[in-house]
Length: 81
Image (tube, rainbow, N blue to C red; front, side):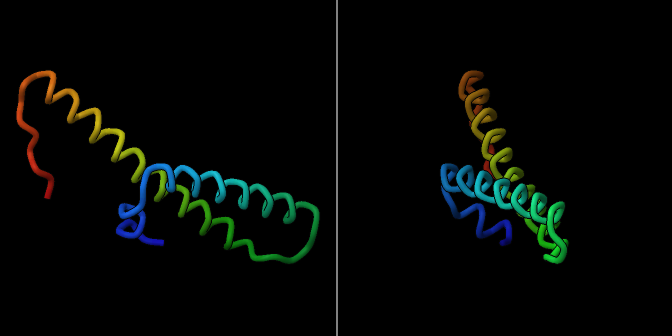
């Protein structure tokens, strides 16, 4: 999962995906504590995916706040490149 794929999805989809990945992380940690075997690198990969999703969600949150502040101040919004 890369950032360009994530940015193409809706906020609701991203929130749903974060929840699903966090549940999977919890399940893997539980299994790792009670069983032998498994793939320990999978937990790290899932954590990175969650971080990517949350980063994009935070970018969207800040962009919305910035647009609202600019509109309140009567300033035109600069285009991001």
